[in-house]
Length: 155
Image 1: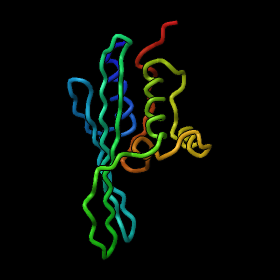
Image 2: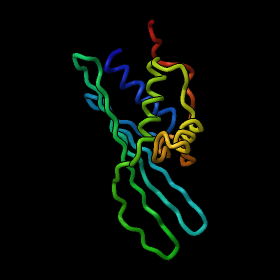
Image 3: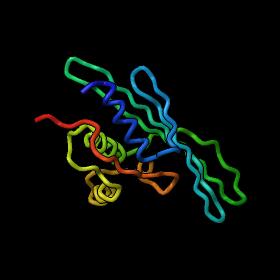
């Protein structure tokens, strides 16, 4: 597997989840991605953005990849002035476990695409903790499934 294939798989994870709402800019060693979202209810609204940074490098041991996600959130309530949104790291292991599991599928390492329901079950069982809204939320996500892995394993 090449660095380019790993980057392509990571981009596919985000495009399948966010579709047209996911804006991706390539760098020499990966990409950055942003998804802006809005949530409205009667007396308040929330808006924000999820920011992804993905990097991959070729090492003597193979491809080394890392991902980081931060989120900005701004609450607007009736009669309350909003504060300035800050970029905060998404806490927990759930979103990262979920991202890497989907990467493993696209790279032909696991036979099943992890659904949002299975990811939520892992949180409920305490296997991982945190939230997975950046990949499985009701806000502007398409949550498409791939037609199959990008790479086939050779055994």
